[in-house]
Each structure stands twice: as structure tokens, then as C-alpha cells.
Amino acid sequence: MAIFIASTKSISRNSGQSAVASASYRAGVELEDKRYGKTHDYSKKHGVMSADIILPSALADAKATVDRGDLWNKAEAAEKRKDARVAREWLVNLPHELSAEDRKELAHQFAQTLADRYGTIADCAIHQPTQKEIDRGADPRNFHAHILFTTRTAELDDNFEIVLKDKATIELSDKKRRELGMERVSHEIKEVRQLWEQIANEKLAEHNHELIDSRSYRDQGKDIEPQIKMGSVATKLERDAYETAKAAAKEKDEVFNGIAPVTIRGEINLMITERNLLVRTREIADLRESQLFIVPAAPTPKYKPSQDSNDELEQAESVVERIKQVRIQRQIAIDAAEALEKERIAQQQQDMADKKERERLLAQEEARQAKLEQQRAKRADEEADFKTQHDHISHQELSSQHRLLKIIDQKSDFGQHLNTLLHLDQQMSAWQRYRSEPSTTDHQKQLADREQHEIGSHIIGHSQQLLDHIKSISDLSTRKTHTKTLERVFDDIKDRQQSAISPEHQRQMRTVSTEITGYSRDINRSRGMSLGF
Image 1: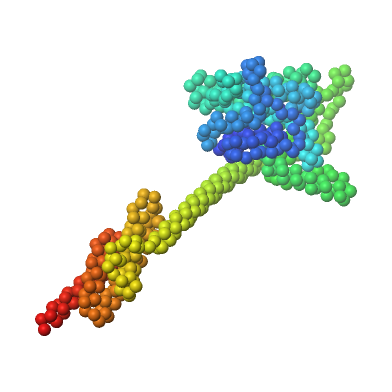
Image 2: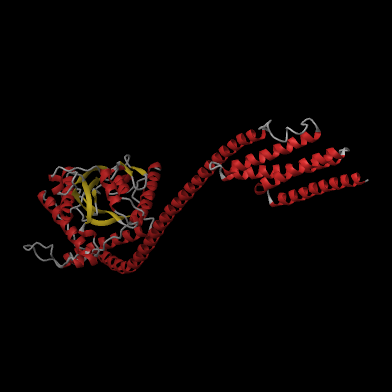
């Protein structure tokens, strides 16, 4: 008989989920996720029987269309919060008694009803168990539909394009729903479950199949213990163990009769199954004892339960008692599973945060390296321009019209020393003009300062050498002439270049200037004393 499953959950960023990724997986297609800059490719996924976009009737009647990738990227773009719900999924079990066409029609009818109820767009994917899943212990009757809904209502804009607007009423908080005079969300979900029951039963009744019931076993008056949800991790462990044991039995040419559960949840569900079976046995025994199976016209026999039946009843009572303990273990298992799931989600979020931080640091380092490379390239260009300027200033000759060069013998030692001094003065002035140009960069100014410092040292050194040379001249008149020339040239350089040289060089130049002036006075005093004799 068909079973009732109609559950819902939110697709939330807070859980590390993406609407585009969810749609890609359920539809078994490749979709580009524009928000996260990645492509989700599940085109090789097996078991997808069909996947269709279902619009609200108003949009469908207007002949509007929307591509799956465009729809779910719109859903992501419409949400700004980092913990936003980006989609809602309804999972429904499709009766295996129906044909594939009837199952598809049933799923689409339910999706269309909810799309019209909330004004949202549905993406209905119908799955069937694959042969691989069946070989691993899955139920071959497990036909089901994953129906993703947008959390916002869909409308047409002025360009006849679908846009997502306000949140659907089922997505509103209980506080907001109370303000609007609506029941709690839990009441809304219960109504949708009853809606699925109604739609599915209409289709089942049409083919004379047994109906489903959305009520709990307790509300139905059935003494049946519901099994706990296994979850993806426990299910995979059970199926892996089942497949391994089945393969080992086949290899040994043994009959495979299944295996014992390998997880706590599997053990609990097995105990619940055994309990339900034994309770059913007890119910049958009770019916026998109350003679419900006796044909009215036949003589009434004395019914005495067999010893086997008594054993079964004792086992049933024992299992009922064990179930009380199992419920405690089940809650412990559920809590442990939920803790593990929260830990997994927290680790996933931490991994995503670490990845983003690594990407940020990498981008920051790449930007820093690019900036350094730009600075190095700029520095290289500046130094190349400076070298060109340096070569030009260094090789620039003194003007032949220089007034001092006309009155001295340039071939003499004094003339050559003076020529060097004048040339250094010319270079110092050229570098000073270069520094004051608007196009000269700070780095080039630093290089020019270094050149000026070196030239200042040369000026002081050559001036000292020139004075020592003059002192070595035997002719007093020549010494006096050369000293006057040196004094005039050096004082002129000192006054003109004072702002271009360092304080240390300024002090040294004052010392040299004092020495030259003092020597000039000594010569004049010596000459006067010789004339007096």
C-alpha cells in the first residue's frame, strides 16, 4: 500500500546551502551559480525521471517563461541577508501503485496548487530509486518528488520579464502572520500536508487503490510505533554495509538474507519493526480469542491459544517494555546526530570562512605584489631618466666665453684646477635646476641630492688642492694673483650653492674660505713688508 510522506524544509544560506546548487542536484543538470562564481554539474546523476518548471496559473496564462538557471539565480539575488532562506522544498512520496504518467500528473498537480496558493514558482523533480541504490538495500518502490519553491512571489515587470517580489505568506514569521490575522506557520504546514493527502487520495481512488492518511498513527487509533528518521549519514553507512555483505555472500556462493543494522538508528528502527510486528500478532490473537473469525452458522468451538501464540504475546509485551528504553536511546541518538550535523555545518561554514580569508589574503598579496611591480617599473623608469640627465650634466663643457677662462692660462696647472672647479660649480647649478623642475619625482630628487653632496665634497677638495698648489708657487706676484682669483671664485660658489649643500659641507666651505682669505692677507702683508725694506 502507498505510504504518506509530505515534509518540508528551507534551503538556507545559514546552513551553507544555495538555491542554484539545490536545483542543479534535484534536476540533475548543470547550472551556473552567479552569486558564488561557480558551476554546479549534476548532469551525470541517475534516477531523475523528469524536472519541470511550474508557474502560477496567472503567469502561465500570460505565456511567461523562465529558464531554471535564471530562476534560481534571481532567487539568490533577491535575498540580501547572509542567513536568508532562498528556497523551500516539499518532499512527497509518490504511490508506487500508480503508473509513471499518473505519478507525474499527481506531483505536478500538487506543485501547481501550491504555486497558485502562494504565487510562487515551483521546480518539480521526480526521482526513482536507481539499480545501484536497490542493490545497496534501497526500497525499489521509493518513487518521490522534490519540489523546490521560490520564497518570494513572482510577477511580470514592464519588460514582460519574471521578477521576484515580496515574501510568500508561508515564509513570514509567526509574529508577522499574527499581525495579518493568520495562523502559525505550523498550522499552515499541516494544511498543506492535508492538501497532499486529498490530492493523492483522489488519484488513488480513481484507480481503486488503498488511500493514505496524513494523521499520525496515534490519531488513527493504531498502536504502531513510527520509525525514526535515518538521515543521510546513517543511511549511507547501512547501505554500504549491506552492499559489502551482499557482495561477500555472492562471492562465497551463499544465500544472502540481509544483515543486522550497523548504526544506532538502524538498530532502533529494527526494534520498532519487530515491536510493530508482534503487536500486530497480538491483535490477531485477540481477534481469535473474541471469536471474530468464527462463522455464525458453525458450532462455537472452545478456542485455546497455542503455546506458540502465548510465546509471541510474551515477546510482544517484552518488546513494548523495551521500546520505553529504546525511546530514550532514540532521543539520545537523535540529539547526537543533530549535534554531529550542527558540528558538520559549523565546520563547513568555518571552512568556507577560512577559504574566503585565504582568497582575501591571496588577493591582497597579489595586489601588493602588483603594486610593488608597478613601483619597481616606475623606479626603473625614473632611474633611467635620471641616468640620461646625469650623462648630460657630466659631459656638458664649460662655455668658452667664461670670463675667468679668458684671463688665465688654461694649460697651466692652476688653469686646469680652476677649470675643474668651475665645471663642478656648473654641475651643481644644473642639478639644482633639475631638482626644481615640476616633472622631477621625489626619488629623482633624492638621487640629485646624492650627486650634489658628492659634487660639494669635490668642490671643497679641489679648492683645498688649488690653494696648496698656489702655496707651492715661488713667484710672489703669481701667488697673489692666483690667490685673489681663487678667493673670488670660491666665495662666489659658496654664496651661490649654499642652499644646495649639506650643513656639514657649509661648515667645511666656511673653513676653506677662511683659509683662502687668511692666506691672501698673509701674501699682502708679506709684500708690504718687503717693499718697506
